[in-house]
Image (cartoon, rainbow, N blue to C red; front, side, top):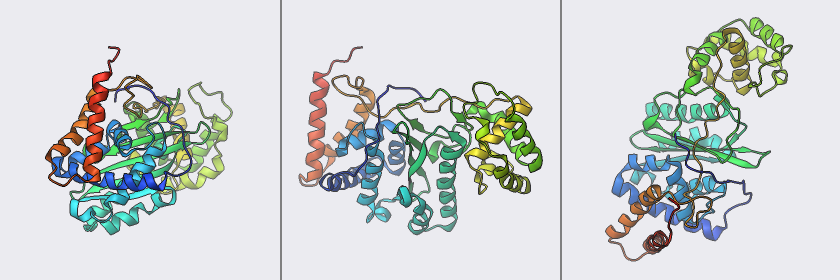
Amino acid sequence: MKKSGITNLPLHYGKAPRWLFNRMVKLAREITLIMVEEFGLEAFLKRIADPFWFQSFGCVLGFDWHSSGVTTTVCGALKEGLKDIENEIGIFIAGGKGSVSRKTPEEITIKNSSKVRTEKLIYASKIVAKVDNTAIQDGFQLYQHNFVFTRDGDWAVIQQGMNPVSRYARRYHWISLSVKSFTDEPHEAICCDIKKERVLNMVARESQKARQNVVVLSSEKPEKLIKEIKIMQRLNLPRHHYIDVRDINPDRLFKIFLKTYEKRPKDFEDLLCLQGVGPKTIRALSLISELIYGQTPSYQDPARYTFAHGGKDGHPYPVNREVYDRSINILGKSIQKSKAERSEKAKALERLFRFYSESRNSFKPDH
């Protein structure tokens, strides 16, 4: 993943105005129909999983380019716009913000006809959430999870976490087409304006040995693990242990360690899936692993992408013309091929294309 610029993404509370959201629903529906017809289901998933395209989509729909709310509002508008034509076009959207995200497995079951495929989709939804909340410990608590899947069984996930202290958001993009392992560099992108100095990242490639050691330790007797934690709490650990080991309560972890000892997970993914295994369990095991085996996990923040194309006036940075062209060409092509009457959708797309052409002619980048 490549860094492509920085822009602030502050948390904006409240809701999109009804007049705006209703129009976002209509335009999101029409753009999706055109894209699926022109490029197919797989191409649609790839673009949704592309952080730049997703943010551009939000800008086209008229939402604030710099607000964290673009994630929840765009996903909500897309879900609402497609709800009555999902079977027709072969795209299904489950989940949402807050309590709605917890209904994702139920919605997948209702929307998908294949029982075998349903189980795989539900598993994917659960494990990606577990990875971003537990295997990556970056201080952002997930509060929004949208699971997009096609009739072919391919899927993409857009989920967002919030840091209540800094009041900034972090968005996580996944797509099944590029996931070879749920626990080894699985993300399509992680977007945030804040890149932290130290983040426990157990799904980094550099953490492979640490993952293996953690699995071995999870099968040890709980008494041994608790003893090691208490020893660590009396030591001065290296600086990169950014979380004070004294915050970990060994007695509370005993039941979890007993469960891992009895289940004996075969790999790190299997360990993550065990009920009750959360951030503190993984953190404790990674610290014990480093102390015993000397194998340090990755503490590099995995965030790479930021959120916006930029602006023609260079704020927050010059427009990425290649990415912008790709987004606009998709929409321009749809206008040229449209045989429908000049509906609100076609007029909106035409205005966008005209605005882009004028902006491109007037904007001269610094390079």
